[in-house]
Each structure stands twice: as structure tokens, then as C-alpha cells.
Amino acid sequence: MSGAFHGATVITLDAKGRLAVPTRHREALVAPRRALVLTAHPDGCALLYPEAEWEPVRAKIETLPSFHPQAPWWKRLLLGFEDHVLPDGSGRILVSGALRMHAKLEREVMMVGQGHYFELWDSGVWSAKLAGALAGGSTPPAGLEDFSL
Image (cartoon, rainbow, N blue to C red; front, side, top):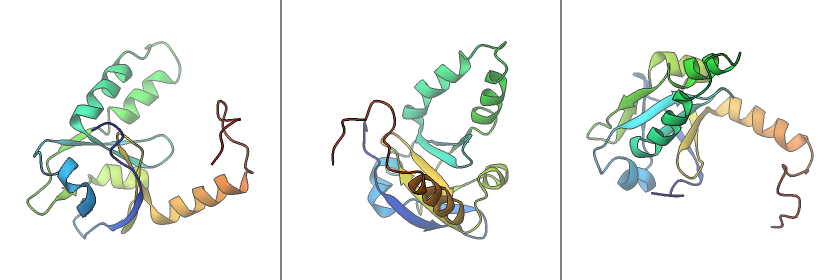
């Protein structure tokens, strides 16, 4: 499944807080009938991982030093919101109320592929963050100074 998740898709949460996995990702996410993991991200979005991709991340989080001032908060966020869900027969997954509140997910959601997982953003928050990032100039992050498109 390495690097399988790419692209951005607008999806809609239904009245019960469920989202339908887009058709192009259903085979990888829904067909195996394995659990998916939803959790919170410190930037204000939700994360969606196949369970097998989440487990190595979880193992690293559990090793964070307990006496570092920020480590317990990262654990509380990433592990505290962790929810293992099985897609229903229609390929929908339920996003918990707490996670919807954290990520401000109401109706229209941007599902953005990140290789091994997806980010789920409220479309308004996504638009504002994207505009802010693009307004910051075209300086690439460290390590990509010589990168060319």
C-alpha cells in the first residue's frame, strides 16, 4: 500500500457524521474489510490511516518521553482521539463527534492524500490554510532548495 494515497477530493459528511470513501480508494481502504484508524492532527485536521499503516506510527508515539513538556499533549491528541472503525457495506465510516469537533468537520470535507494516509479538513479551514501557505512565498522547505518541477 506504500504511497497509494494521493489527490484531493471533496466529500460530504452525512447527518450522522459518516463519510463515504471515494470510489477510487475503496479497493485499498474498504474492500479488505480491515479496520481504518481515525485520529486528530495538531494542525486541526483529522487523519485517516489503514490500520496496518497506523501501527508503526502508534508505536513511535508510545515511545515519546514522558518528561518532555509537549510529549504528553501529543500522546493525548494522537492516541486520545484514536478510533478504529470498520466501513459499512456502502463504504462509509463514522467520524466520532469529538474528532469532528476537533477538526471542525461539519458538512463539506477535503480528503487529501499524503502517501500512506489521508488528511480530512473542513473545506473552509482547508481553503484558509492553503491560501495562507501560498501567500507565504515560494521558498521551499529545508532539503528541497534544489527541487524543480
